[in-house]
Length: 86
Image 1 (tube, rainbow, N blue to C red):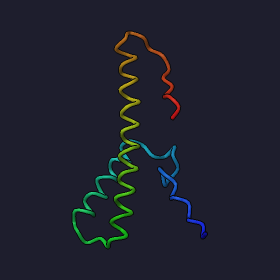
Image 2 (image 1 turned 90 degrees about the vertical axis):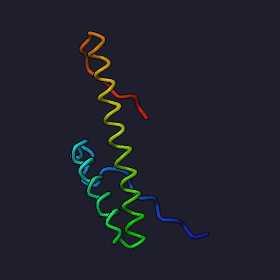
Image 3 (image 1 turned 90 degrees about the horizontal axis):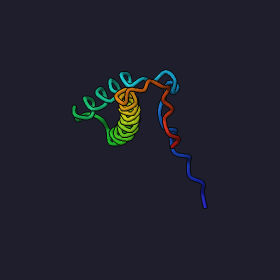
């Protein structure tokens, strides 16, 4: 049985420490614009869709972390926030 190629590594392409919420959102908006243009070949459209899904997941994680920090602040307690292990 032939071995399958491993799936592409998830976010980010530029190194996780360099990807911010703002950069991810900007890349996502760019991908959406290219896909809406309707001129991408099928394989590129699929790759763009996959990357977009990864970017959405990344952004959702960042927003969840921000909401948790706000909840900590609203409780009147300022402390370091450690996101839960996934």
